[in-house]
Length: 131
Image 1: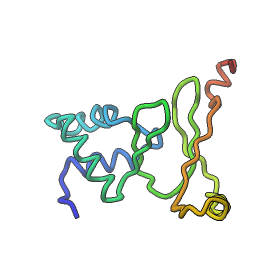
Image 2: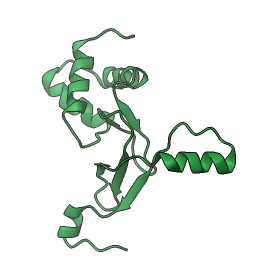
Image 3: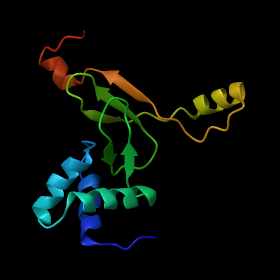
Image 4: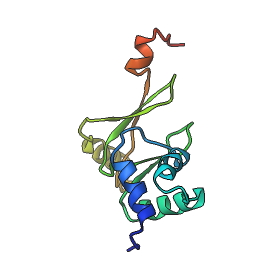
């Protein structure tokens, strides 16, 4: 259990109100507009506490800075290879995949993370080419 503070409340509200998967620095910049005295260290500490308590999720997407989100349920992500934005994919989690891998390997699978990559619709509409 953790003590609820105005800093934690502001961080949590920001994450629940956005779908942009911000970095800790982005969260700091936004929350600082509401709480000018907040420090980066406070944001980082509170993110750690909120993650441990299950209130926020931490995304360690390969090749990017750690990002956070207020959506804590299992879901997939898409990362644009051009602009770097991360999007939630509303597709049911394939729990059958966990079962198939467990049966084949003998591992106890608790969950899996899946990241799709390519070009987002904004980059496509700007005429971005795939290399």
